[in-house]
Length: 382
Image (cartoon, rainbow, N blue to C red; front, side, top):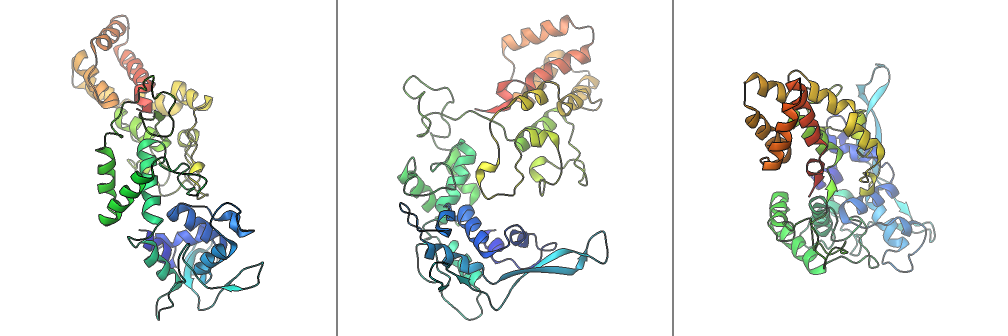
């Protein structure tokens, strides 16, 4: 996947990977974005000066940018938009010429791997192909660590290096040995994501309780207990769709398309935006907002997304009632679907008391499902 992105050419409409070069369009921005996304470090400071405390120099910055100096983008006359006379699409191609000049020295910079040697100039191989070769080699000192750290972050809520895209000497990892071991195992597996996820999730660290003890309650770095955090915007909306059995309809996409399958963020969905869906315009992981706010609380309490799905006449509650399920079986179904567990004795008592005093049974079940969706047990990963 990374190789396809780095070496992509052709129509951005027919080759999705080529869109990488439609967002970052100049060699300097491409160098910064590629380093931050796939190598885990930020080179922006070296654009103007040698950093006094970090390893990257101006020469490193502009030598890395030289890999992208010959990437060009032009209009695709065969891909028109609403106006047939105006080309809407673009084509990414490799030009024969193009260099990057170091502004302080005026020197034309040859493409050079960060912290490594000059890129080999082999016949028939472009600079980007040489970069992709180096980037994905098992012995690459940055790539595997960067990817492993991102996956760890998504599973644990915090990276071994945090922020995940800020590897530097002055931002040490929580556990160097762990990071190296996971990176080596990941590379040895042939960059198998499932193997990496399985390895992390089978660990004692991943399976720790979110309930801290008096000895580790102040720890926020060394993973002595699980991190409790709100589901992401896409996870939350997809989960609500699943438990209510009412899919979300996104404009221009088939009914049943999940939020995690959206190709971009151009689809304006208020629920997703409220819960921090990023615009995907920046390379920084920080673009996704994760802090809770009042707008989110209002969406959960009386927002249209949840209320319309709970009241839908073809949802899970309607199906269960139509099947003439007993109150116990309906409650069991709602708990299993929402919280992945059976109700406790106290849960049964609270539900039965509410059902008994309600004149409209359908309304009572809607109340109970609303309560389950608004529970911390559902909203948070814990």
